[in-house]
Length: 353
Length: 250
View 1: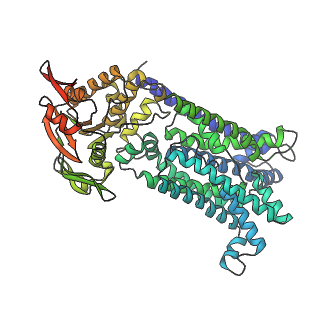
View 2 (view 1 turned 135 degrees about the horizontal axis):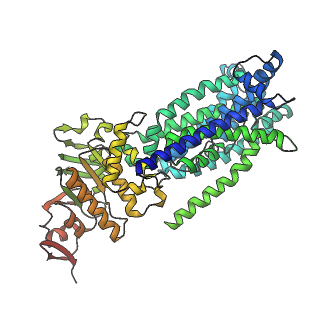
View 3 (view 1 turned 90 degrees about the vertical axis):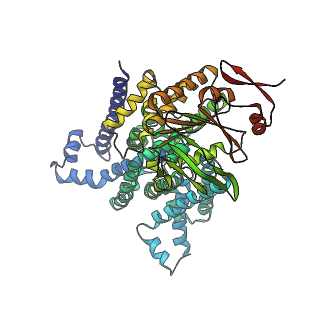
């Protein structure tokens, strides 16, 4: 077999993998929509998805009650997955993800801060109070604080001139600080605020409403399009920083914009669904195993697998265990060990060289 | 083909390079020599545009590189840094990155033709869908050179292309560099640490000292004095089948 044929076959295999992911997502959508307070047969779901008439009650149940959860799973999962993949490319570290960089925790802190601020009335009488009480108040604060985390990481790494690899460790530390901040807010919160904080801190797809999902979609679309537009720049940056610069890629600028874009979409995800850790680590890691680092396949693959993992974890948390467990807990149980595994593998390889 | 005029570079008001005039023609290998920290890598980064010279300029033919975007400049000058990480990519995907100055979003048939031609020429066919993690040091270096070659640039800048290789891999890499210069008529500027290898492989030697060019000579006119002035060591230059060969003085 010639090298050309071999490469074509490799590309077909990667295409097939992406197709299988898409099929898997569709299957999970149907299954997820079927279960709930009562079972709706799969064929009815499929008919309904293609806008065929199946009776108004079921239509309402599917579209108004069960669909937001599914859409949340797809948008949040794909956003976290792609953010992880992009961060890993631009920071050149397989451990980078919204969660490990501390962006998730800082966004969570921001949202909890928004709750506390309105409870304490810190901003009463100012414009900020109006913003806070609006639908997007928590999202906005989540974003501001996640951006703060990014800014701190970027500035610290500029000043100290540490490698992009070390930026991830800074993120882990920063995440711990924000998590401590979150705990202290909880400590001072009254019962009701505390309950909504804690409830919200467990990543859970059931919280999403159509209004919030529309906001997420408005943020999600340009971010994803931007990432796709940057595929070749990210490939070059992943290969080598100097090689990328010599091709006219603004490495530092792209790194900053990529981090801001992924924290933006992460912040909105978190303000809607709470903290869902490790999807940005799990998804890209598995996809990378199959397709390699090439972002042409890695970016769409990570989006799809992120969505698939989240839908699947949600299914497991709702139906396969004796108790209902929020999806964020499931992903952390899966992702934590993987984090350790990647860490050990990375260090072992360094030791060999 | 590529030349500099009075090139200088300062970092935090410290002059790293000054008054550097170097050039390379197509079909020629020029080696940059000199002790560590003399600014060889800095010079290379100025040539390919990663660093902006604070004085002087770089020309390719008659084109002033200040008037060319970095992306278009990458079509004229290709750079292979000294230490490049091995990422989890296949050889083909990796070489394709070299086409990035030409690619907007989709890879064209022409891009693929260029890449395959280079892959065949460097005899990388059997490695095409192998991951870089599984390559030997020499194979990985070859892939680096292939990645630079698909940029279709007239000048290649190689920063110590054989420094991390064992002897047999280093020889093979030298052979490939010579071959692409002869077959494709590209000009190569390379930083070398091994004097004898540089003499053997290059057409001209450029010795650098104190941030500028100290002496530029043909590869066979190296003398004991030059080596002493540049590296501060005493050596003997002996003749080896017509070419000078440098050995330590006892």
